[in-house]
Every structure is written in structure tokens, then in C-alpha cells.
Length: 291
Length: 257
Image 1 (cartoon, each protein chain N blue to C red):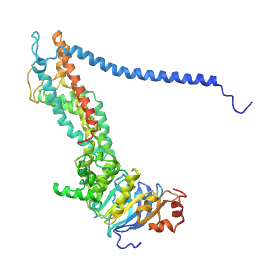
Image 2: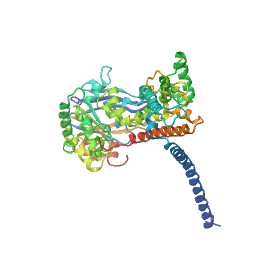
Image 3: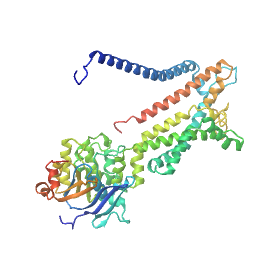
Image 4: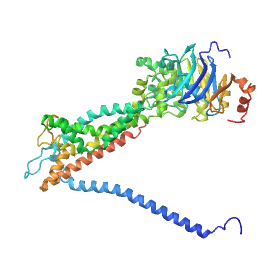
């Protein structure tokens, strides 16, 4: 008998066939799982579109809500209210988040930055209803008055950790060679950061900002006891203000068919807004050839 | 070489990355209006030495240097020395072209300038871009992004950017290692031309390049502990024909490295 066992072609063939089968099965399982995610999004989108598109018309977009029984009416005040509330939240959260992110990216060593990072991660995990309750305790209960600004405050708290971490990541991902190039020219630490590093990170920062806005657009729970909602045109952030997600909620749990349709239409608007924000976020990140 | 008259000298310099010593006790002088090549195999500390000369070494966390770097007899590591001032006087070009991605060609060429009017900027940019032999290629697209240029052009833009602040010394860290042969040739010709006005220190692990462009050569080698040391430094012709150290001869004849 030779030192080596004789090669058995038959056995090798079986083994290869088995491996092919396992590989095929693995590919199939992962593909199915991936499809489930994509398909469920398409189903939701399609269902909401079909159910909501009938109620979307000019009146829906431009008129105030009407009492039950009257035909027509719209959610114009809710659309404007949502834009105002989210806009105000963005104004609050952006400077704080951006500067903290910059701080973490540039001076991110030691115990203090670690604590900031940890707390920010915790904050991003807190349920939005709890954030809303916090805003209620701080800005609604003491004044015995609901207000849009308290909702913006709650939204800002939800956006803050997202903006902070994405801008930290954006600044960090600027190649070290770029920063060294700026310093080697005799630019100060401050000038090289502001003139060279941050501009290089700008697309990624804006993307993070847009995703943070998308995250709170359509957020409903904190609104229940902050902005409260309103039947009227209200543009003063110190007053209760109509909100599209709240209108969807109110209409959806009502017993009236015409309101159900409007709830679907409102939901469709929210989804479209988030979709547009996400697409924008992608477009910003795509490098352009010339400027 | 006579150390007197050298604009830049290194005396008993040791450089560290945290607890690790990368370079030990290096003393050398860089002549004016000449190209000095720092060569040696990977890990011999040649780039570290170069990065100590404009104190860019120390921006890495934990990195520091001990000993002296003298710019016209002024210790650049002295507490009164402004790092910003130093880096304006000692320019640097990096291994890979690193133009600032959000700035135009003009913006890159003038990125190191401050308190200069727009017309002055244009003048300085033209002078620097001519100095880097790039002007003719970019004069009609000064406002295009720098990233649209080819690798060799980007590297010449980075040289122009360094020239615009009018340094006395130009440090080049393997400036052609990421370029094709034609771009390499143009950068090497540029180095020779620039040596009329600047002291140039170039790190290279390419011996042919050192032989082609440099007037003086320093050969470095890491010892058994991995600490980089200067083996010898002399006129390039001498280093390549009659090196005084056996290890230099072994290296340049290709016996290792």
C-alpha cells in the first residue's frame, strides 16, 4: 500500500456537489431575507399610496380641516405646523450637534469625550414618548400651556445624537493627509479645521442632518402632549399648533369614512416627505465633477 | 560637508511614537541651494526625521522629538518658536498628492496665504504655479476643482501651494512614489530647478532617484532594536562611488533593502 490513500474521484464529486447545494441554499436564504425587507417597504408604500392618493387634491393641501359631516377640507395647517416645528427643532439641534461632533472628532480622547459619546448613544435609544414626557414636564406643565416650541424641543433632543455622531464621523473620515497638508502650509489648527477639514466633510454632515430631519418628520408620540394639535391656522410657536402626524392619528381612529381617507392621504404625505429627504441625502453624497 | 551656512541642521535628534523610539541621535546638516536625499529601507526613520523638521511629526497622538533642529541657528523646538511661522518657512510636499478637495486650483495654490487681496492672490498663484511648471496647463481652468487634475499635476499643484508661502526649505516625502514614470520625471526636473532657490530635503527609497536628483545623500538604517540611525552622509557622488561604510555599499549595490 502506498503512503497516500488512492484518490477516489467519486467521493470528491459527491463532496463538491454537496458544497454547491449548501452554497445555493445559503444564497437563496439570504436573498429571501433581503427581499422580505424590500418587499414590505414596497407593500406599505403601495398600500398607502392607493388608499391615500384619492383624497389628495388641492383642497386637501391648501384648506383647513372641516367639522365632521361637511365634505372636503384639508390639512394645510398640519403641513405648515409640521414644517415649522421640525424647522425650529433643526435650528436648535444643528449648532449644538455640529459643534459637539466637531469637538469629538478633534479632541475625542480622554474620559470626557467618551462620556459624551456614551450619553449620546443612550439618548438616541430613549423612546420618543419618554422624550415627549420630558419636554412636557419641562416646557408645558410649568406654564400650563401646550406649545409648538415644546414639541420642537423634544424633536431637537431626538435629532441631537444623530447629528452629533454623523458629524463626528464625517470630520473623522476626512483623510489625515488633508489635515496634515493644511497644517504643513502654516495654517493654524483652527484655520485648517474651518477652511479645509470641515468643508471636506460638508457633504457627509449635510447627509446626516437630512437623515436626522427625516427621523423626526412623522414622529407622533412626543406631539401628543407638547404641540397638542389645533383646528386653526396657528403660526405662533408659543401656541398649540396643528401637526400632520397628529391629524393622521385623530382621523384614523375616528369612525368616519371620509376622515379615514384623509388619514391615509396624510400618511402618504409624510412618507413622501421622508422619501424625498432620504433621496436628497443620497444626492448630496454623490461626488460632482465640477463646480 | 561644512555645517556652517546650512540653513537647516539636525543635532542629536531622537524621535518617538509614544514609548517607541523610531530614530536615535541623528545629526546632519542640509546645504542651501542643493537637494539632499534621505534614503534607506522601509522603517529606517527617514520620513520621521523629515516630519520632525517642520514639527508635523508631533501632531500624531503621543509623538514627540528630543534634541535639536536648527533653522538658521534658531532651535525650532524652543518654547518661543511659533509652529505656524516654522511651517511657513519650511514647506512640505507629501507622498501622495493631497490637494484640498473642496478648493479650486487657484484656491489650492493660495490656501496658505492670509490677508492678501484678490489681485495679489492671482499674482502669487501665477508665480507659484509657474515655479511648479504647472501654469501653462492650468491657466485657463484656475477655478476648476483641483481634484480634476491628474496625479502628477496634483503633485505639482501641492508643490506650488508650498512655494506660494515663500519657504526657505522644501521638504518632500517620497513625492513621486504614487506617480507614473513621466510624472516622476517632471517632478524630478522640477526638484533640480527649485534647488537654485531652496534647500530641498527629499525622502526616497528609490536609489536611482537619489542618484539622479540629489547633491548630498544620507543613508539611514534601523538597528537590531528597530531604531533608525544615520549610517553616513556625504556628497551623492561619493556615497554612490566610494561609500565609507560597508552597509551603505551593500545597500546601494542591491545586496539588501
